[in-house]
Length: 363
Image (cartoon, rainbow, N blue to C red; front, top):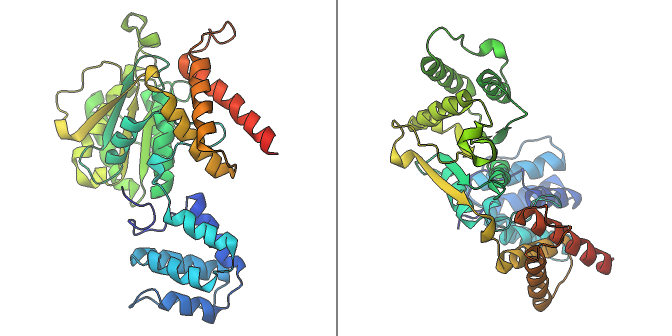
């Protein structure tokens, strides 16, 4: 499993645990000479620290340079020696040593729970790495949790320093609006979008080439939702204009070009059972499927462990197991007040209530 700090050449500034270590180091008020001494003990051939600079910038430079050198472990050792008496710093160091990649995190926020997503995590992890497949199709029945996959992508994008764009019904209505939102996300207005003078397919290719030339070093990861049919029924028609899907199918094809794939990733949600384009190569895409029945007791238990650690609330393992059993049993009871909700919504609602109850007991 790739470590989010030690296996990356860039310090993951978007992560809260990365920001916390930096914040605490600044608060130590160590003078320049002390910071420089710690820095130089970590590796040879380091660039000199910029002077004059305040502690905030100095520690930021230390963390950035040592990550690029692959010497962040050495820094944590030096910090542990220098500040062994500081419980907050030792806790922050320990958190980084035990850090999970963003794709494995189950607790995103108090509003977003990511439970059984193992197969989705694997697909998104490959798609966001250097693997060939840069496009993931998310398929499954209505209300089976397909849209939740975008939260996984957002977590990884934050960790990797990429921007994420989410497109769905209600945010865009036409392919022109979808394209405009991509240009806007890389910092360009609609005047930069090529004029359509030929067929749709030719225009889509021109747009993709233009995006490649304008993106520079920016990384944009795009999740496009609602690509299937209303209520999953083809006879009811598509949720989004089919031209939007056709554009992103062309966009996905451009992932064969490494210079394009370096800048973009694509998550196509609710792709339903649409046959993929014949020009797509087998290795350039993968798929994952959601099923509301997949969430079981073990997934709720794992989530509660992560949530309790994040919240600083100690819950004994036996109680965690009992709570997880209760959540699933109550979600599957189909009481009158819950019968209008799908299974995932029932689990989320009951889990919310359990968490509120735990927090009240702990306060």
